[in-house]
Image (cartoon, rainbow, N blue to C red; front, top):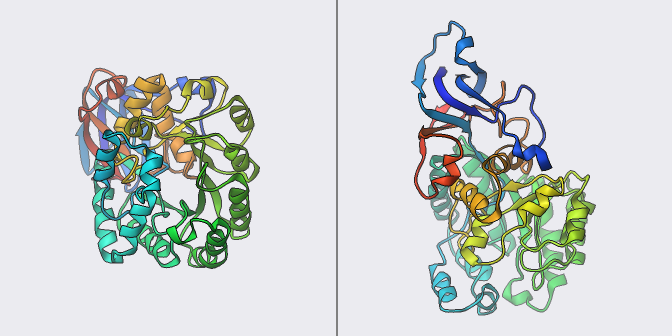
Length: 411
């Protein structure tokens, strides 16, 4: 099956050879071709270029993209899409003056989601999560990472990971799984953090590895949750099973989580709303991708990740949604890109780079996703008729997507 897209106003994020990521000043550069064509063969990008160089080509499907822009689908490298029920009451509680920490202390937050998830069947959990997967695909996301972490018992954590695996098997979107058993302390372990970590490391982690239920390991390294010492203990244990770290750090306080991530060669360190100069310095020259989650800052009214300081220091930056029921009940990467420009002062080029090629790197997918490159997955967004790609973040809240293709097929 071949699909030919012609008369593309501008084809974004084009490259001849896959690059790992873009950093610093390089993030301001978005390679494009104006008046372009793109040829898809089955699930892959076969060819692209200027219309004047279009070869004599027949295709099963021909799409005229006059005045439309084509770009790779978004790569959302940090989500919690698999969860049970919602937490809109906590949303109301925050409006009425309670903080995120106060809600958690009162039995809300992660523990609220864990209680709901422990009591739901695997089949029902899959049904609820599948609806969310279908929604984000239509919003232009072509690859997504999903974490466990709302189980907080062996059975519930494994249930979450099995649902993630089933979603990956049943949908064309590429899904990467992360084991986040150390997301919060269950009520019965409130004063026994070591005891709970013992269960995560000795009872759950070996099964996760044996059944190949996750590629990544995560931990909420934060004041009141898990310390740097806890984090290093867990990452050291996960190393023996070949799980790659992708960790929550610096959301509310900076306690050395970035340094722990770098020490264990984390693929990404995520959140980073609170960043010290030494945290930025620690990331220089490493393989670790900083990941910002601006819609979390928007929803919780907490500081935004200092994107300008990070990028201006020569570092890369990725953007992701943090889609979850408590602090970011949205998987809309279009809103994330807009918010990054509006609130974090990223340029449209930087934001698109962060949400495509750098997001792909933060999931280990830079060879197959995140750009328009021959041989990569044919994961594409075709916009409506718009004046320029800057209109994508500018016109926030207004749907600008006309069509989405994932692995060569329209969603």
